[in-house]
Image 1 (cartoon, rainbow, N blue to C red):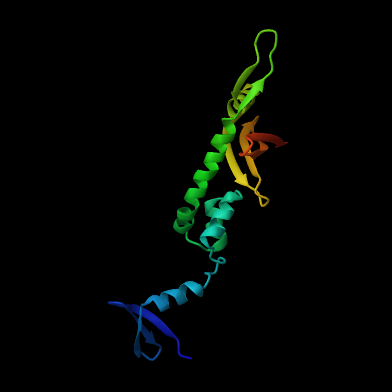
Image 2: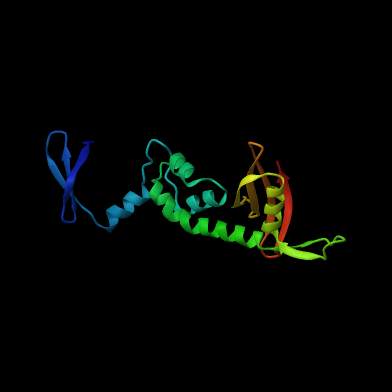
Length: 176
């Protein structure tokens, strides 16, 4: 079989040349485009990902740059399909931290209700924590995890809760 290399484009045709200099044209039509999409050849860094695979990886907490590097998919393509999922993750964080929790009464204060995120942040800041940031991810069994990352005494720490958005219920999972 002779190998042909692309040398340009003319109107709706691709110009190819063989090793011996013979030139060929291939019509760029729907059939060619379909064939190219169906038979994608991954580059040396990994398998190209479908939009669904990109979005599932983002939901699972993988960074956009890690997805692009691992798969060989261009960063701009990953960003394009990740954008709606990043908005979804931020919505889950916003929803979770806005849940009002009841604080017990003491001799100076009556029972109070405050947003969950505010209570957590106040407690962390009171212990000297800095660089607080919230994140969300969805695990394989479709359970949402809401986490806060922070720095305390030059050590990175985090706390995680499972979150059921249908019930507005948070359950503590880990803290380190």
